[in-house]
Image (cartoon, rainbow over all chains, first blue to last red; front, side):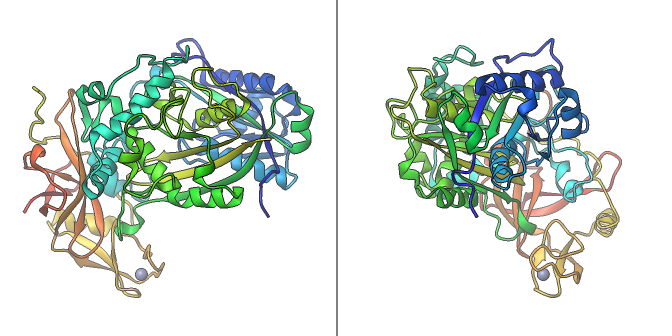
Length: 391
Length: 135
Ligand SMILES: [Zn+2]
């Protein structure tokens, strides 16, 4: 059994807020839900499936379902960090294909800028916990920055990847962000400016790191019957896959690839397409190295060739061979709640609908990928891949 | 640049200890560094656990490690609000790679492949934890 063609994206919404001084986190979830429902042309009572992850406050799905007054017959709060929401879209497609629901709502929201030192992700230190690895790992000052930095360091060692090549990823994102009025950082930057920004966790500079933003987003996944009843372009889910990766007992440790090396090929196989067919790519960009490794893992280039692949504007829409993160991505636009997965789905849907900003819209964009890595790239993380087609 | 990392004097918090890990920490208090090896498949693993992560056998035994290995990777965290420090993975000569800090060294001179040797560093109210310095 496959989910290919069994579900569609009916509605999406990215909260325009980046600094939520006056809103509560549950309120932001509800505002995102309302936005996505309005985009789809559906109402709350149409929702019969709900998906959320670790950012949902309180008792997770139970609290949010009760808060929003949802009446659902299917729910899922799988937690894989920032990739959760890409994975949720795949799970929603599975649930719809199995007849467990027909209108699935996925929400993400939070206020990390109001909770400096608190909240989820985003420079978060690995802290005390009952995790099995806690006593042996959380003592070493691991944060998102240095745990991703370790991957970049090893990738440079094995493949000769350079800081200049990584910088091109940020440069491409900034070229796109200049057209996004909601982007936190709209200024176009150069490779030289990225390299001149201070080192945060070697070899990563400040401008290799994503933004920290409040806000959120929502996605509505619907059955084919519901999709055809909506007055929206048809965005069909044709492939999805997920995979976990960790240090695996310290045996054969290899930090030069991510779990996307497993989820990517599986999603492409289900979709029956190849990386060469993809017109637009939403690639999780917590850090520049995240993008480079995932592009390799997904098969857009050979392992180790990522640096050469992304250089010289290759990821800039209208210029390069693979337009990516045309909203400005997590590097410039938005990384709500330190979890960028949902914005990856949202911009892919905009591209497939032809609703991206005209300056970055990919012509006749009929096939897109949304891929993410959540958690700690150099330790435990979860990858999710989604392949979407304009029908 | 005026932001040369200072020697790593980051305070290390007390590690979380449970019944599964207690023998490791009891040995650490005596200056002994233990790893776990599986009797069924013969492989050593890290972090130590009751069941072998490679073959899921329950027959895992504590053994003394020489505490020597090579840097697999590292990252120097530049802090303005405290001491800079280096986190990284060491591949032990016994096989497994482990997360750790590199101490008592020039953080700018760290290199992948460099030989390092274990030492124990005091923590805030807990047993000492394994860290590494150039061999
Ligand atoms: Zn074994």
